[in-house]
Image (tube, rainbow, N blue to C red; front, side):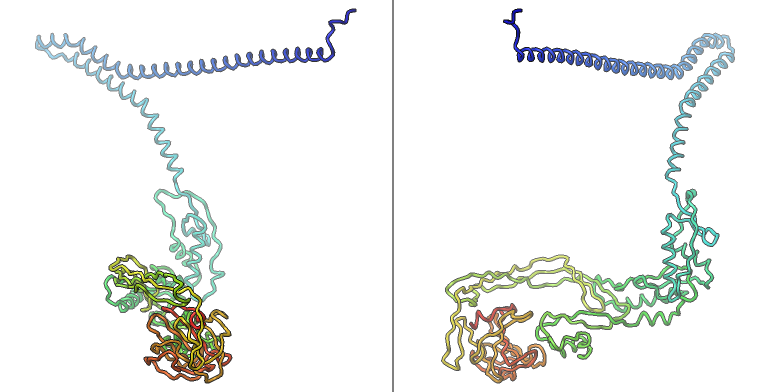
Length: 567
C-alpha cells in the first residue's frame, strides 16, 4: 500500500472537525429558515383572520344600519305609495261633488301603521338602553350607599354610627360630664350590627349618642348646658343665659377702646348646647360665677437686668424677698448677674383675657459699624471717624396682650422713612505698652486708660469662670480705687449681693467702666471725676471670697477685655 498521500493525524482531525461543523451549520440554517417560514405563516394567518373578522364586523354593521334605515323609511315609502294611489280617486270624487271617505280612511290607517312602526322600532332599541342605564344607576347607588353600625345598648337601638370609635368618643363625652364621680363602670359594652343606611338617613352625632346613653343610666339626669375651660368640665347649669352674659360682661369690661381691638379669653371657653347631664354635675350660678372671677397661681420666668437687686425685683414683681429666695434656693449663694433667670409665682385671673390689636409706630433703625484697622494706634483704641446715625422706620404690628402684659408682637409691615448712616470707627492694632505714672505708682495705658488701683496684678481674667465679665485685682481692704479715665458717675449701688457696692463711670465716648466689691464709695451719681481721682476703696462686699477690685470695661454696652485697656 502506498502511504505517500495519506494525511497526517492532525490534518485528518481538522478535516473531520470541519466536516462536522459544516453539517451542523447547514442543519441550523435549515432549521432557522423552517422556523422563519412557520412564523411568517402564523402572522399571515393571524392577519388574515383579523381582516376576516373586521370584514365580518363591517358587514354586520352595514346590515344593521340598512335594517334600521329600512325599518324607519319603509313606512314612509308605503305612505307615499298609498297617497299616490288615492290621489286620482280623491280628485275624481271632488269633481263629482262627493267626499272620498274611503280614500281618507285608507291614508289615515296607513299613517297610523307608520306611526306604530316608528314607535315599535324606537321601543325595540331604546328599552335595552334605558334598562342598561337604570341597571348602572341601581348598581352605582348600591355601591355608594353608606354603610354604618346600629348601636344596641342595653338591648335597645340607640343610634346609627359610622365607625365604632364614634361610640368610644361618646363614652368620653359622658365621662367629661361628671365632676367627681367614678365613671369606670358607667359605660356598658354595646352590640353593633352592620347595615346600609336608608335613603336620606344620617349618622347619629357623638353628642346625641352620649345623651341617649345617659338617658339609659340609673343616675338622675337633667337637661343642662355644660361649661368647659381648656376641655376641662367645671359643671353644668340649667340656664346658660346668665353664664354667657357674665362671660360677655368680662370681655366688655376689658376693652380698652383701641381701634380694631379683639378681646378673647386666653383659654378655650366652651358652653355646650342643651344636653343630658347627671344631676350631681349641676352647679349653681353663684359658685360658677365665683370660679370665673377667681385667681390662680402660675409660674413665670424673670430675666435679671443690669443693676437689678433682690429688693428691686421684689418691688417690680410685687413678691416678697423671702418668696423669691424660696423659689430660687441658690440665689443667696450665686448672687445676681445680668441675664440670669429666676422662677417666680404670680397670681393671674382664672379667666385671663387676650387682647389683639394692630398699631402703627415709628422706631429707630440701628446703624451698622464699619471698623477700619490701623497700626497707627494701639489695640483697644477706637475712635469714630464718621459718626453713625440711626434711621427711622414706620412699623405696623399686631400686638397680643394677656391681662395687659404683652405676650407677642407680629410685625406686619415696615416702611423706611430715613435710612441709617453707617458709623466708621478707627481701630488700633498695635499691642498697648504700659507706662508707670509719676504719681501713686499707677500705670497709664497708651489707650488712654490707667491702672484703676494702687499696685497689684490681675489674677482672674475675663471669662476666668462662667459668667465672669471683668478682671479681678486682689488688694488689701481700703486700697484706693482710681477712675481709669475722666467721666461722669452714672451709677452708685450699695448692695449685699452680686457686685456688692459698685460704681459705674460713663466716659462719654461709648465707654463705661465698673468698679465692684468696694468697701466704701466716695462719689455720687452725676459727679464728674478726672482720671486718677479716688472714687472708692477696695473691699469684699457682695459675692466675693476676698478683698479685691472687680473691674469691667464696656463699649456701647458690649463687654470688652480690660487687659486691652489697662495692660
